Amino acid sequence: MKKILCVGLSLFAWVWTSAQEFESAAEAVANMKLGWNLGNTLDSNSGDLENMWIEMWTDRRPVDYETAWGQPVTRPELFKLFKDAGFNAVRVPVTWYPHMEAKFDTELKWNPDADPIGTQIQSDWMKRVREVVDYVIAQDMYCIINIHHDTGAATTHWLVAGEDEYAAQHERFEAVWTQIAEEFKDYGEHLLFEGYNEMLDPYDSWCFASFATQSKYNSTVATSAYNAINSYAQSFVDAVRATGGNNATRNLIVSTYGACSGEGTWNSHLQDPLKQMKLPADDKEGHIIFEIHSYTGLSSGLSSAKSSVNKMMTAVKTNLASKGAPVIFGEWGTDNGEDYDNRRDNMAAFLRHFVEQAKANDFGTFYWMGLSDGAHRSVPEFNQPELVEAIVKGYYGDAGYGAITDVYGEDAEEAEYYDVLGRRHATPVSGLNIVRMTDGSIRKIVKP
Image (cartoon, rainbow, N blue to C red; front, top):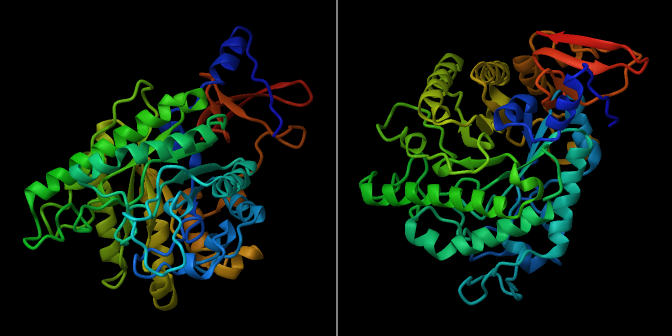
């Protein structure tokens, strides 16, 4: 993309110097607009110590994992499809444990104690992750990469929310993030790192820590889990910052316990993951983002689902965003197959409402998995166009994304835009924007 210099007498030099600084976390979340997950792709893995089927029945090439869960090989054109529709960010979940030092031999069963994953990431896997990141960045979109199914409830997880588990694994966790950060240290502000996905306690409790214990709540287990989450978050930030380069101010994302959003009122502990989350210490103030996930059922009706989301977002604002960092829904949606087949109109209405409410609260949104799925990604095309329209209208309004035209006219080149404070933005932001036109004239563009 060609750059247009901002001008404005004495403002010029200050703007140009300031523009080299990474934008804040809040600016990044606002500039992402709409996000989507490239799910079931680089996160694919066997996930079962008793049935390591990918390792047993494939050559273990990067492509064997990328396509193992039914998705095609990722192509650059897929991201242009989303960019043209109005999306400006892609979360790329990545699972790392199959691509480290474990041999896996030739048996279906895997004993991690006898065949440990070590700390080193395989170069061919890192290369493929980088290629996909480059596809996204080439569309001038934001890209998030993370540590994904190394967490969660699968028996192959190695990242667990417990103080003892943190003590045993934090050096490996930090080593993995050091390698990722070194690989991408020269990338610009459009690349963000997410420390970990849905990390659970030793009982695999969803909703809040210790929910899967016999008593449905155990204060000792819960305290250990929340302490561990905060420790992992701090280790992540420290490891990335230590690599220097652009990682010194890169925007970093940390998730609550289980990425829980606190949705619902059926248990008094549902808000604990939000309340117990701490903002990691960081020398670079304003470059941390909180992440949560939300999947809302529609079986009780549209009105009930909307009400639940409204209450959840109010609680997120009060119990998480108030800690001093912006919030993204790194995953969100409904029962994609069931609701799309049987409640399509309600599903579309709900998705629009969710995006509208998130935007009103300054939360970012990354829809999980649907919209373009399976073979449709190879075309590429949307297989759920009604949902795309609902999401896009939720953010841009009834006229949709296509109604937002190039405000600079035909005589302007594509540009990186700057506000009057010299902060760089991927697209014009609300308020005053300054740009020099290709004909040499100066224009001040005000975007509502």
